[in-house]
Length: 168
View (cartoon, rainbow, N blue to C red):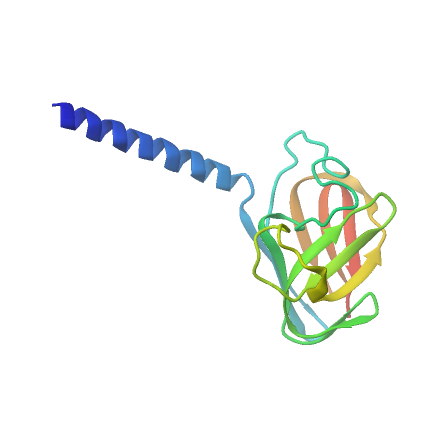
């Protein structure tokens, strides 16, 4: 009887921990945005957190610091052909994608080390490309972080901002 109680307790503990981990993961589920730009296939893989009544820009995502541009693992940006980003060439490849947000200007970073967790080991010495763009105030509120790709732009929408850049 004692072994049965211990077994049951262990099972319930394992179930509770597994359930809590699953719930935590669901807060920022993995998402993918794809599109074609000038014949190049672009794919962005990211964790999509929700605002959940938090102040995002300047608080949850601090100004002036490298941010993983999503949740969990660093966001990745992959193109199967060279493209231009804000007029500068980005060679074909898979990159980690970071943003350094500020009120007036954001730095978009394509880093050659595609596989990394968050921005904790970010190394600017392996940046492939950096461009500066102005964040825009959105016309409507976006609860879940979302990327969109069209023939001329890539945009990140979240809370009350849109951070976009021109692609060709």
